[in-house]
Image (cartoon, rainbow, N blue to C red; front, side):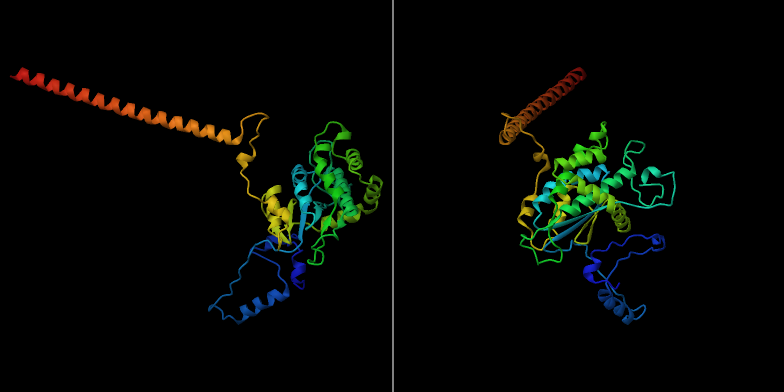
Length: 350
């Protein structure tokens, strides 16, 4: 490719419809990196050697970590992840740049799948999260655009960050966006019964007012830029409708807030102090123990377990000794009985 190494890190190699004809592992490299490989292959005599290329899948590091996330504003899993990850994102707002992407696809004009698309042209479509329910693909697309507008309007470059000028990516933070998406699932659930409290424009605008977001500006942004934003999302797809990219590296782990945060912290050349706390080892079993008010502390609980274990061990040893004595006694009685029988038989023969 004529792209540079830096540019290629931002490109996702996706299937354009011709992927079925490719049956070997494929990667995209710059011309600068590929030229030595081509020269080595040409200089190696056929059948007398081979060129070995090692691929390392470590997270690329930088002073500022760039996170791209592909999702759907109407997907329960995406909304749950954003809600759980929002506090960790805030903790890293001095060293992280986040860019949201939304899953949009197009189809041939059809009325059969109208519930998935913004209109009958089927130019912009997405998943319908509740099937025959009241939420449609058009409502999800509208929410996608609202979130893009909120993020675009409120993201601020962190000029006070100590990392400014040290990385190609600027540190950005959109507080209102994260306040909004963190509360969206609980405030406007997909299965809400009241339209004013269910996923959709009415509930969304109510939540925006609660979070101090300029509703009129967002409405105007949606009206004037929806087609351009949806076109951009449709043409910049990832390898999956739910995808995460860290410093241009494809994240393939579980979409869990803690696991993702650990991967992000691995992408820093020098980890910020927040990573020390966010990635410290935890014991899930102990972490989930809830101590009732005025109840027994963890130390007392462990000590009680040790005391019970000691009593159980002592009882087991006592039972073992008692069983041993019983067996010895039973064996003696059987031996004596056998001897007595043999003596009686001997007397009868005499």
